[in-house]
Length: 187
Image (cartoon, rainbow, N blue to C red; front, side, top):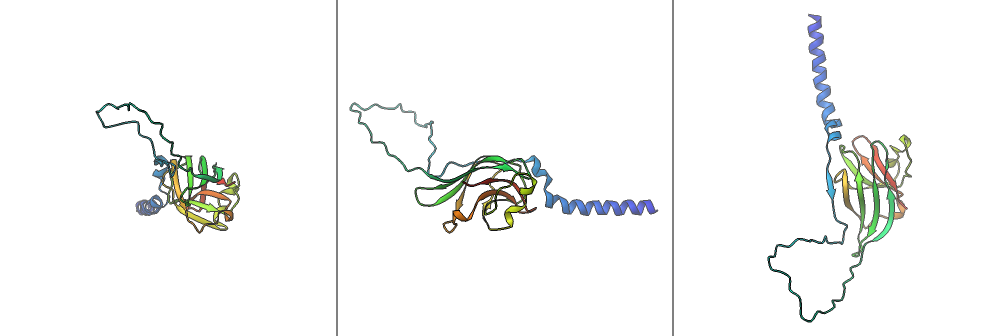
């Protein structure tokens, strides 16, 4: 009788632990990926396909068109992501767009998927290894939003009131467990 009661109690505890642990840790995210491939702001992708069945025409008097030079984004700060809690790589750049706005661009991002991942600007110095996993929420930081995907190229608007000189790094931050997946020093 005792064994049966102990078995039922153990099963009940296992069910409760599983019901709490699964939503908290979301272990299936280790097996999922989300790829985001956003264009660089201010650029228009060039299409090489056409739906027209009419062949192109050639003008009898070709005129030399004046090339239109569109202003390109200006690079303000750059950095290279290093791994912390999870293997992470890619590059970051803060860009000033021709319209005066700013954007954080993450390129070639490769990291693990995880629960509640954010993109932060932080005043913390990037420290390699385990010592750098938890430093980014100790001082000033500014969230630029949720990580859009764990692979690819993505853009995050930098609010006009953000003083870039106040921040030294970009971090992929897991808000659920207060740990850095990866970070890049800004220079």
